[in-house]
Length: 350
Ligand SMILES: [Zn+2]
Ligand SMILES: [Zn+2]
Figure 1 (tube, rainbow, N blue to C red):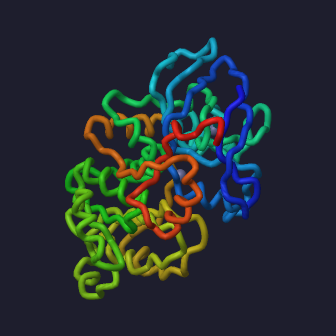
Figure 2: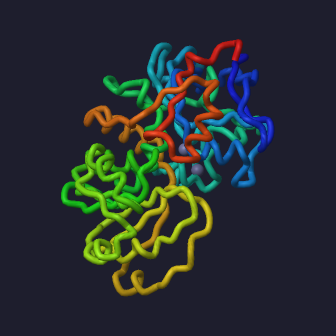
Figure 3: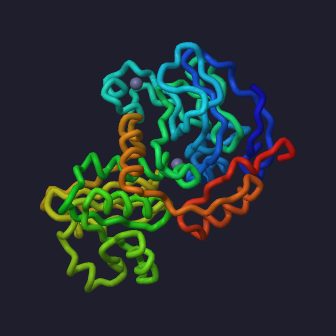
């Protein structure tokens, strides 16, 4: 199946129109027309080879909403016309202990990423959602529940599940005291989802500028992390802090905010952190943790939860040909809170 998308040909090149082929359907494959694709910070990092393992040409995009246009003969869960979604992974070994318990994101043989990864059968590089069509095995296709706005749902597939998974892992519910560091694509979803689960939510920010935004998203308050007095008054007052900051930063000021047995979980940054003192860990049995996306079952649970609670990302819709400008604006945090590409804007003409 010939299709079109946007690709970077090198780390220095902007994204540009790109024609390529999607594989012939295997028996358990679902083919979809992509309707919307969210723009994740990692798309920008991978397009520019910031992490050092990009394969070119690269077609980013792993927050995908589409409609089924064809299914393989063995597909049982989907039919033509269904609204579906695909997130950050499109395959895994499906045999190991992690896959068997629905934690495909932690597959012992590593999951196959939606783009910049290698197909488990052909070893061809996978191309993501900045394109018109996608072919994915049915086990990695999500169902978009009735009532979820298709035009806004795309960011749930990465930003949504990356925020939701730690909230579930650490059993957040009514009465939980949750802090969220950073108010970007991930952070704004962490706030909405934690509020949806019934938690008491505080946004941690370097200035009070975002206090109104935080409250508009449903947070109870904003704590200014540069305000020493306020920070010391807030010591030992959080059960879970979700750290969504995408770049290197010092987490030690936040460790003291955790109550005994509290956890600070990093979801936004891949890379080194500053040296840590063990005092808060040892004396308060506090933990510093990380968390990736969630498994397929948990991702479906999150989509259903969002439909039930009417939780949706705040999106700014763009055309495909605005993607390079969107990357630049995203680098300056100039977006509230997620760009979504309307794939109807991608035509043969590019
Ligand atoms: Zn992402
Ligand atoms: Zn596995």
